[in-house]
Length: 238
Image (cartoon, rainbow, N blue to C red):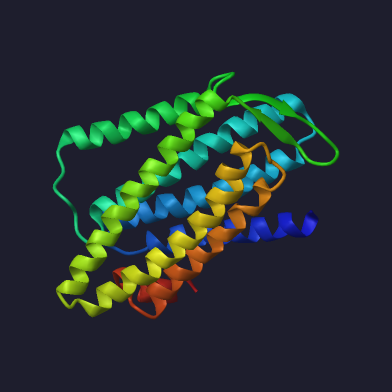
């Protein structure tokens, strides 16, 4: 477990570094802010999961696990935000943004309130677990999957648009970014969303390390494919 925790901390640090590098550009676009938010939250997600697994106090573990679900709820919102403004900003009405905000607010509230998503916390020498309130957890899962689906639709339609327009470098950047996100999301949702849904909470530690694939994909796009022209910023940071 110590090795897993050390790896998770290193990956969280890599996410924080990525967020810092993305924001070093002098001219910051909305897509960069959303990418930085996603990377920061992914790093926090790993830290909070580790704190929960290490906690020996039921009250502290309960506070941490509520924060864990709140932090995780930001990820799909960030992905939708990124899809709305990368590679170019979409002109959507205020009603769309209001609906997105309400969906996130519902997920945040059921994450934080007592007997919301989390019914109880069980402290054990073999690994801390959570008893879920499946009525609210079903709403949480629906929120997560629907927002990820919307983000996937937005990013894939943008990818095919730039590909049709023969913007080969931009298409290559998006392909790298989408590939890293998809793989990280598939594993993250399996270990941290689906397995708890069927009563298995023993592998929640396994989801956050897969965010390294997102970090690698974005670093590759920055260094090799000049994403956001951040190569010079990366050189300055080193």
